Image (cartoon, rainbow, N blue to C red; front, side, top):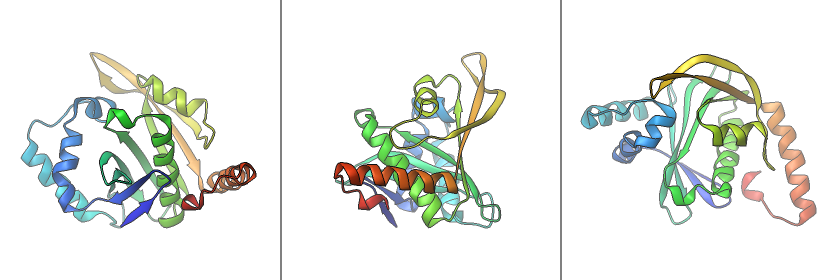
Length: 203
C-alpha cells in the first residue's frame, strides 16, 4: 500500500524490501543515530527483517516498516512504527532519510506530515511518540523549536539511555496526541488556504 505525500510517498515494505532495509540497518550513520551498533551478520539480519515484516500488524508489539520514496520511486529512507499498541492506540515513531541529498527541510517535513497522517487517520492512533538521543543536536533543535508545520510535546528524558563513543547520553521523549494533530490540521490548512496553496494530499 502506498501513502502519498506532497513530494514523496510512503510505501508499506514487503519481503522484496528485505535487502534494502538491511542495507539501511547496516549503514554507519543510521545505526549510530538509532541503534548504536550495526549487525555484522547480514544474512541473520535479513532473516530477522523478513520475520518482522511478516508479523506486521499483530495484536501488540509488532512493527510496521515504510520505505520513503520520491515520486520517481527512488528509495531515500525508512519510517518505522514500533511497539504498536492497538488496545491503547499508541506507537513509537522512527524516521531517517539515508540519502543525504534529500535531507533538506522539505523532504523531512513531508515525511513527517505523511507519516503522522498515516498514524492518526489510517491506523487510528491516539498518540505517537518519538525518541531522540541528546547527541542528535540537529533533530533536537528541529523538534524543540517547532517548525511551520507541527510541534511535538516534550514528555521527559530517559537518563543515560544511549551509549555512544564511550559515553552515556540521555534519550528525550516527545509525543503528539490525536487531538493536537487535529488542531494542527485545522490551523495549518486554514493558513495554506489563505495563501492559496493546495495541499489536498495531506487531508
